[in-house]
Amino acid sequence: MTTHPRIALIGAGPGGLLCARVLQQHGIPVTVYDADASADARDLGGTLDLHADTGQIALEIAGLSDAFHALARPEGQAKTAMDHHATVLHHFAPDDGDTAAPEIDRGQLRRMIADHVDPATLRWGHKLTHAETLPDGTHRLHFANGTHTDADLVIGADGTWSRVRPLVSPATAAYTGVCFLDVRYDDADVRHPAIAQLVGDGHLFVRDGQGNAVIAQRNSNGVVRAYLAMRAPADWPERAGIADLSAPGAEDAVRAHLLGVFAHWDASLLPFLTDVDGGYRLRPIHVLPDTHTWPHTPGVTLLGDAAHVMSPFGGHGVNLALLDGAELAEALAGEPTVDAAIRRYEQSLRERAGALAPGANEALQHFFGDTAPGLHRAPDPAEEHRGYQERAAAYRARRSA
Ligand SMILES: Cc1cc2nc3c(=O)[nH]c(=O)nc-3n(C[C@H](O)[C@H](O)[C@H](O)COP(=O)(O)OP(=O)(O)OC[C@H]3O[C@@H](n4cnc5c(N)ncnc54)[C@H](O)[C@@H]3O)c2cc1C
Image (cartoon, rainbow, N blue to C red; front, side, top):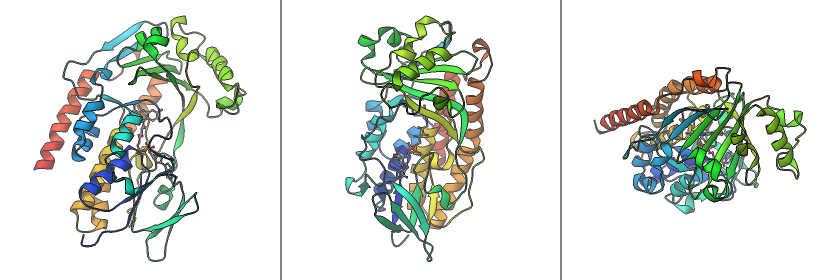
């Protein structure tokens, strides 16, 4: 490219920030717009495992491997599966030196990448309301703060409810029938020792084979977080008489509802439902169709959840978002035209996400299905870790070829 296109990137999540970082490494100007007031403006939720064959490759391309490993928790790869009688069904402890999928807090990951993006190019407090195509084929982006900007290339990295996606696709994410409540236990070893002990260094998966589960995870700084998860209609809070989960008194109503839903669970597990710090945050799980794709559209593309939001089972979401971001930036740096770069990038994205989405979505339905806990077949973590490392080696070999 002889002249630089005006690139507007919507969404400073992990995928968008990573893309901006790699573009800037190549000297390509980009401006990033995000609805949040800053990188730390809200509690983003639980921990993420970054896979050797995707997320970690992206961080390597961005020159951020050391920064990641300084924060990452390899011991967080431990996993315990339990039934609702608190009987341990499986336990996995990672070997020393296993770095196939270490954990990092979401907030730490976002802050770490944002710190490696030119601050003058980050426009916080810019919520995109809509985008329009101008007669010359470029795009005008309108923000809730009353400003607008024009761009030659719009990158939609704005997550599940993308406002960029309508430029290329009519698809919207649909509710899976599974709702998570995101909760936290602060200073867990001291204040919630029983919970801390059950969770250990890594993850605890408890399911009852009747559509209910607790997925708890060790985070950094003494925090344990959990998703209290239920197969439930989207409007279950209204049906339970809880109009707004953040309203005064709502916490007691949610707690009472949960104690009803999980009434058949062992008493030792009930503190996960009741002893939370900071309330209950609704995270209903929405996904795009497995086969979501869009016709090539000059001057617009999508990455991460905006392109292919899928169920969190398999832990692909953030890993794909990071690698999408790195590959899009590299394509823009390497191809002679923006159009050629988008075509190359979109082909790779489709193949990768298209191969993983059906399995991730099926795994969610299976986990929340009626299979008895002892009969549920979770992937073998040791085998998964070998797979990540083998695919990472193959990816590096392809890149250096
Ligand atoms: C409950 C739950 C658990 C999950 N667990 C895992 C897991 O264990 N492992 C895993 O890999 N993935 C997991 N995921 C998925 C993972 O969070 C996403 O795949 C990942 O965050 C996608 O990154 P992204 O950069 O594409 O989008 P996001 O992280 O969603 O970032 C989008 C950004 O766009 C901004 N934005 C949104 N709308 C606008 C707008 N209109 N204007 C301007 N800015 C906007 C947002 O503020 C945000 O910063 C989970 C998801 C959920 C819901």
